[in-house]
Image (cartoon, rainbow, N blue to C red):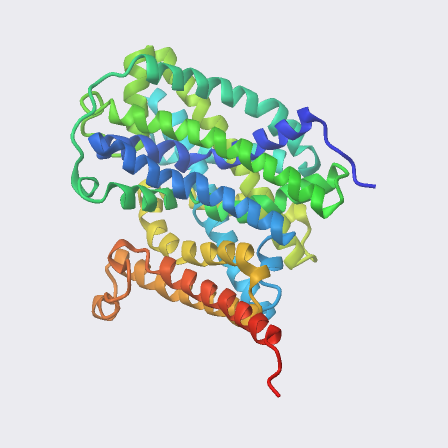
Length: 442
């Protein structure tokens, strides 16, 4: 019989999911975006919330509705298709970009401000210890909810609350004018900036991990698992929205204080130093390190769970060690270089993930499921590849040949095309029903 969770356990599940999502990108991108958006703060923030809060929530609900993650959603396609999509997303969100970034951001904000001069050796030492600690937590997946949801996250929420309240009570500068691309298309730029958090990709991973944790807690019924996952998703999305709004406002009201800052971490550090002084930098270091650590644990755990299912001859424990080792190596590339490399890749992978989420919601209304899902993935991948090449400045004549596609210049050509395929698939099913219902003419 499926066990019912207490209210405390449900809240802990939501807090744990919030902590898993709230990592490096969630903290460093909003302040910089807010400062750049200036008086276009509202549309920019709304665009960011769509991709950084709305899409992850939809992703979690999609996993709940499908009864599993990417392998389940793509089960009608040839096995290699689902595996290729899943492996690509897990590598991007895991050892290639997102997980190593947690260690880098923790180093640059959590330790570097207290050093007279950072060196490659100090970065190597910090990231090594960071991922050793992440391994220690990830090797106990059955205790993740107790460790993260009931211990680490409340401390994280308390520290973030102090920062959020101070932003509202003590804004440092008037909101300045929008700069650069944020002047003309603030909503679209906010939407694309939300890609950088990688949370929509993470939702497809974390959803699977959460189902596994629920199963370990005795919740074995699929409907109950879906219900708890949706509740946890709402809790996590609410927390993320509050954090993003406060960090956007922090950036927008630090236009003079943080002028010349190259990233959101510098904006945050400037604000905290101004308001709280040196003790405030310790608070910021604790917030960032804790947020990055919990996210690293979730990413490493989810990746290791998936690869253990894919290649069971290698144990979960060994996959944790492999993923964490890869993260520690990649983390020493450097934050700026890692972000630069990741952007074109995200423009390719994100549309495919979005196509899976759209299909998970529309699948029951589609009769030709295999054909429609295959077409959606193919179109999403192709249009995403064009965007990735465009951002990277590669094969420009080829890329520009497709500039006629709707929203191509916004890097959103995948959206109307994949939606069109889904709508046509749903309409075809209704046509079949109408034909069956028609009386036979004799």
